[in-house]
Image 1 (cartoon, rainbow over the protein chains, first blue to last red):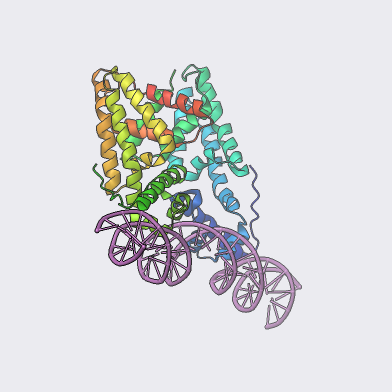
Image 2 (cartoon, chains in turn brown, blue, red, green):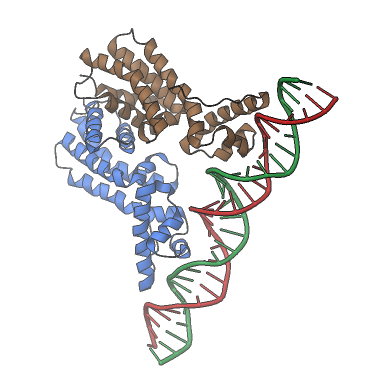
Length: 181
Length: 181
DNA sequence: TGCGAACCGGAGGCACCCCTCCACTAATGT
DNA sequence: ACATTAGTGGAGGGGTGCCTCCGGTTCGCA
């Protein structure tokens, strides 16, 4: 990914930079990609001008916040690589889901068109697709399904609302069982 | 439901009323519940004042537009009542899905809290739940699933985006097959 | 300690949206 | 034909958000 967001040099600037990042994380989690930038600045206790200096475009801010989180998905993928195929896949998906609960943007990334979303998506695919293919090769997943199908299935189900966590998991379970060979 | 939106009396007024309804249908389909009312008025070629006179609140407009469409779901439910259980259920769901594609609000209704959404939801349930129970009684649907689970599953999957129609249907198919007994 | 470069932050211009209010217009019934 | 009155539509006040610009502040090196 190697997204070079230029970190500022001076101590006060660096403080503001971090504050903005934290505020943006919060705001994006609450309101999705559309969160108001003025609100982000407000949360960070910083002028709107400062926000724009550090992150000239909404994308830049977005990138700075999410790239790191997407990278974590790769790490989980590596960590489960030695489990049995189906288990590895579902464990990774669990991470994906628990992620998506707070980080809506991870899901929005699946759908939107833009350079950075494409790049996030690519990273996700690199992380999860091998797990999927392994499970498929082991005959545990229907041959006529693709990893893209799976991600869209999971992200669709995750972005909806449910009576409680239990229902979400139950519904996800039903859907996943439809994917077994 | 019996939602009495007071239809105006004078000919010109009635014309405007219909134009607003049509415009709202369009706007809501494109932008969901949040569509701008000024945009609706613009599409209808009518002053914003006229919109507000006919539909004092956003809810009123919304109601006028969707109640009728939700009612159609009931009709479809009645129409498929004599087919085999599973087929009846999936046929109804197909309607639901093709509906939800253009009428996003039908889906938003599942999630939002408000008097009218509750009422829309109730109508949907009255229409579909018997079909579901019949399929369940016939042993075609897992006993541990509820109609609510099913609707949320379908609406979640439907609200996502897909590469093409084909993928949507494929994914929906996978998920539904996970619901079979 | 002092000074220049780096950095700050919010005012301001623009755009959109919400909703109210009321001077005007034209459909209707007689 | 014309008075009556239902109906019109948009200006206007209040919000929020986007982004730019620049006078003022502060850091940190010498």
